[in-house]
Amino acid sequence: MNSLDSWLAHCERLHPKNIDMGLERVRTVAERMALKFDCPVITVAGTNGKGSTCAMLEACLLEAGYRPSVYTSPHLVHFQERCRVHGETVQPDDLLPHFEKVEAARTQGGEVSLTYFEFTTLAILSLMASSPIDVAILEVGLGGRLDAVNVIEPTCSIITSVDLDHMDFLGHDRETIGREKAGIMRTGRPVIVSDPVPPQSVIDHATEIGADLWLFGRDFNFTGDKQQWGWAGRGRRYSGLAYPALRGANQLVNASGVLAALEALRSEMPVTAQAIRNGLAMVELPGRFQIVPGQPALVFDVAHNAHAVAALTENLDAMGFYPTTHVVFGAMADKDVAPMLARVGPLVDRWYFCDLPTERAAKATQLQDVWQAGNARKDVQSSTHANPQAALDAAVAAADPADRIVVFGSFFTVGGILANGIPRLDAPHLSS
Image (tube, rainbow, N blue to C red; front, side, top):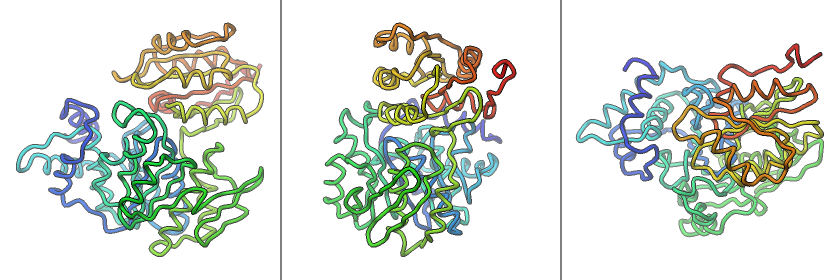
């Protein structure tokens, strides 16, 4: 195995399940690897907002002169997007020795079966731990308590939103899911909860283990108008802040959690107000209410659960009037699609459902059936397509310059188009 692709294919063959909850196997291999970090670690869990939170933390810390490393998942186009060191995406070849380390540790003294996510997480953590970094930012993949990144002891934990997703693994209500996410907390360590209305289970667990709980609305808060916003926390305030470069009203909640975390870690990693201003102004994260200028307007969003689609709907509504909104949509088969389609449905004039290149995805025809079963608007059309690019091509062909095209759903949906580069829709046939 002399390429990243060959290692990833190997990882896919090792375990019969995509997801196998539990830390024993990962911890065994991590201990064999002597995996540990000699710098502060910030672990981020939550249903939505994790990627944005990690990106804002990274941007502020880079502006403050630190050397952060970030692990996020999944990726949009290329696997190596999952890890950045000093603000740069790692090179595929840089990961190879760390896949070798995981394989050697996994097979020594009794073979340990790891899922694709567990194996690749350990490889990326190994690369990060061996790099000259000042802080590690780790995004939880699923839940928290039993997620592979939880084998690393966090200096500070952040829990963003808690809502219904991955219910087959995490539970069917917010309280149960909250308990799983609370598993990243540690005794005596700060935990930032940026969900404005967190489940009681999150608060209770923090109390039980004696974590330093920072609650939105109690320990930190924000105010804002159309031009600027301000933040107040334990003994510190920021005023006249420009809005984060990441679009959407929900990003202020995420940014507030970021500022609380930086405040909680101030004694170890002081960050100036100017670094925060610059970091929030310059942060980038593809696929999070990403608007591509052109005619028609083009919006990308990886919203793939009802909570995220509600935020997307509010953000689309705030964009103003468009004669026709065309929507490209693809999703995993385990998603509760009906409430997502119902939530954004009033804004949509034409649906383009697409297949995705993974066995775990719902078929375009299945998505169309779910939509038709709940659709009350007879003036709305729909079609099915073999892949996201084909769906976008159909939308572009049908759209007028003043229209809007929205691509949302799974990472595979957005990534399937961004793999060809960011499309520019000022095509000749649209400008006439």
